[in-house]
Image (cartoon, rainbow, N blue to C red):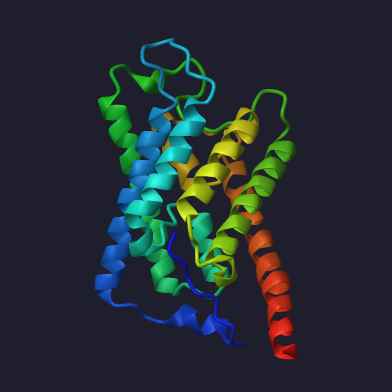
Length: 254
């Protein structure tokens, strides 16, 4: 994954109001639209059984989401840094590395990309996935018995874990993001296997929104917005004001 280089100067937030060219914005929009659509299409396809009522492999969803994330990073990483997640975009804004107008373009593209990707899956699936016995294919919902606050804490901590990886990959001290696609493949597979049985391992508001809209399924949906954004804020602020600040202090003492 290509990286935003961390500015070691004092006025990082000056980047927030830089106005990028319209060509750059169009390029970002198309890359994020296509990338998020591919995420939803192939990721959720891994959760669709081959016939109605059929069973899935134990790691089908984890492999599908981890694999598509890794490939999409390679495809659009050099164009838009491959956010495909409003939480990653929020992280970039908090770090002062993304202009506000670009952030808006990212989020709009991610939203419509998720709707398009899942919508195409609905169209091409050979049976009506909207009439699932449960809440719907690829809909994220806490497992029965899990309280809202437990589910919220899980999504918050896990998204924070993901964002710490994002920050580290964007940190030039880590090698400028070498093998970034493999790093994200590993974390998505790991969290999908471990966290997926509890909350569905969303970590991405638009990933949960698109299936919820198509299936009209909103059980504890607020968790998949509050949790990921809360985890993003805490992890980004920690990385920025602890790890980055300590590094600056060390450099100033040299």
